[in-house]
Length: 287
DNA sequence: CCCTGTCAAGTCACG
DNA sequence: CGTGACTTGACAGGG
View 1: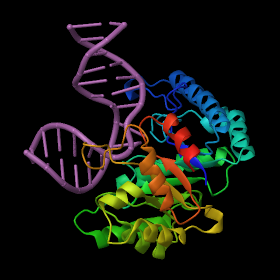
View 2: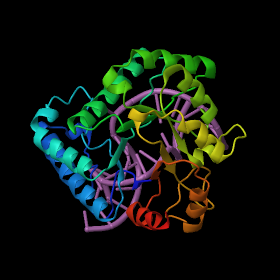
View 3: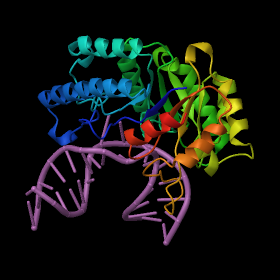
View 4: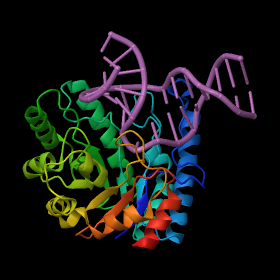
């Protein structure tokens, strides 16, 4: 079981530095990518020292990567550094994931949105390919919108999934969410696509079909084939007294210990906790 | 220099 | 119908 925190380390330079589209220039782009890759290297070294061997790489690493304004051949220009980061990842036994944001909707009704989403997934796949990682390095997305008809929305997801380029398909995983698509809905999609499904404890608390956490995780575990690696799990805790679904500022050791006790499978756990690395270090000590 | 509105992108819930 | 939330963070202009 590996533990990680998402994207950023607050004690190190940001690995997800970006800038405004309005101030785009090739120079600014190159400078930012260079900064982010250097920061990623530093962050991975930090994580090795603290035995935090699951990492979600920020989607800001390559800003505007799939935007038409962006024409620099970053894979070529940064090939050497990307490959060396990949070697560090492989040598230390890291598990890697990426999580494109809410604008990626492969089940959208508007074909233009679907195409843009595939463009975004495409650069994520290119990035992981440039690192030289195998298919256990995953790109995780949510199922998408419901548009008033969940069955049709699922059918569109399945249809679009079949059309995806294999460089995306082999890395794609879905995560159930807190309002629209439950573990059960994702299992329906898995049966039709073979796609692995990521468990999220807080989403499951918010939206479920009566199954316990253990039951849900056991169901999802079978969606992970050998080439996908062991299952990925997102862990977070409701921020006390805040809006439902909002993530806690820091790890509650007791809550996490209880959660771990009810994890019946071998999996890699991503902490979605705001303060990032201090919580991950504590969590690792509790495992 | 700090403050804060706003940032490429979409959908849904809430007032 | 406008706004905030989403794994949020942080850019960048105005005070």
